Image (cartoon, rainbow over all chains, first blue to last red; front, top):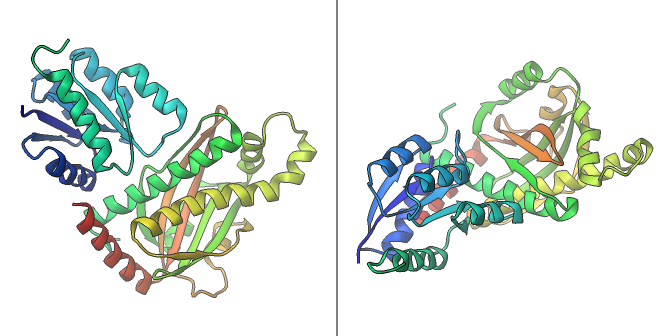
Length: 127
Length: 204
């Protein structure tokens, strides 16, 4: 099953890097991009994607706060927050918000695992 | 200064942020609670501009930790704070139970250690991501007005270009603002551009 994945990052390079990894792990998925939190929230309201990967470190809303707001709008969306800051407080906050924590630099394996898990949650009939 | 392209800036910002986050994780081990370090923006400015910016923003005298790096890129890395924040930073890292005398006694050593962790975090991460080796000197503490930090005697040749980063620190409910400056000469900036392009090529 092919899904639409939203990549939220203010850095164009970072979005390109995620795109490259996605082309390897899930070449059939459609990619949607947002450069800031407002765009991401607008896309959430318009049902423009099925799952999302969000950078933690962005100007304005940080990635975890954004993830919380997106989940308040659409609780069933699988979300991952990417951060180089893997201190236990940040990882715990991600879990509390209901997002998966992925460490930067992002690897094929970590992205692949998140994608597989998300696909399972999104599959028709999954609870 | 438009020496770098947007993508090259993105790559630099990304590396520096990964670097300071590594450093934050190391400091967290030392402190035992969350350390927040972030670098919102990377800029390239002339040396005079860097001095003017610091002089305009910081009224007090400054304290800096300085390390020389050498490899494909040669230059100096500095972590700079307002002098008034120095003891506060040491107290934040060393813990609240120490007396003022003990803090003062520890200041030099603690600053060298904190500077070393943060500067090495940045430089080592950049070196790894650029797939190059950088040799780093031992940390040295400097104090004074902004011009002191940007007119150090060679070797190496003092660079004209400064990669200037604001760094926000939050430890134990304290907010401490500082700067990271990397001074490089034109040949080093040119070498850095080549390395950044190679990195962008690999990542995309």
